[in-house]
Length: 88
View 1 (cartoon, helix red, strand yellow):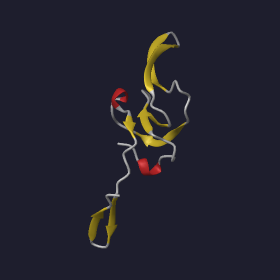
View 2 (tube, rainbow, N blue to C red; view 1 turned 90 degrees about the vertical axis):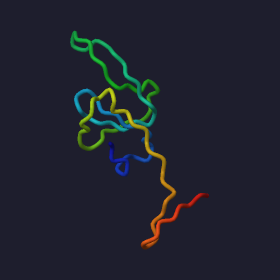
View 3 (cartoon, rainbow, N blue to C red; view 1 turned 180 degrees about the vertical axis):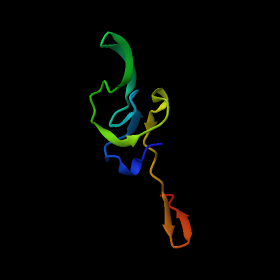
């Protein structure tokens, strides 16, 4: 869903806010609710105060379902026409 190849090295999670803006998170955020402008609202919040940065573009999924953990790095390498897997 997110373009992890463009993520900062430290980013381990990504989530999209209710206004459609995507954010990289160093630490896993949680959904928190509160009152803003006299209205009940909810958002992704990092209570651990890790680093975060804006992602480029917008993700078109319901924001509550947008949390994604950085995928594990693949050990598969491409050599010409052959694909081999490094099991070390």
